[in-house]
Length: 131
Image (cartoon, rainbow, N blue to C red; front, side, top):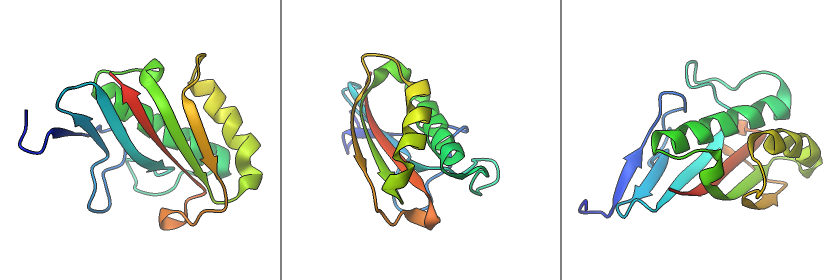
């Protein structure tokens, strides 16, 4: 067990943290992975992907699932997700992308609209995975 009881998890397929946080943290017991909110930033360029909210949502989920994969999990490992939207009007577009990434039983989920998000993102997604 580490002194802090947690391990940092990163992936080359997810953007590096741009603040004082870890992209994901795994409990030393190895049971849970807590994935920080991912925004639609391309890890290679550090810029938002083009294509609007659907493209940003896909990039969020690609980054999130890359971090889950780095910890030994899969999309089926995700048990809880929280989606933050700049505009609740984007719910249907993001829901469509989300539904392609997960299968039943779907993770438990919360979606919150009307949020000011980091760097002007249109969507941010965080998750908890059981490994």
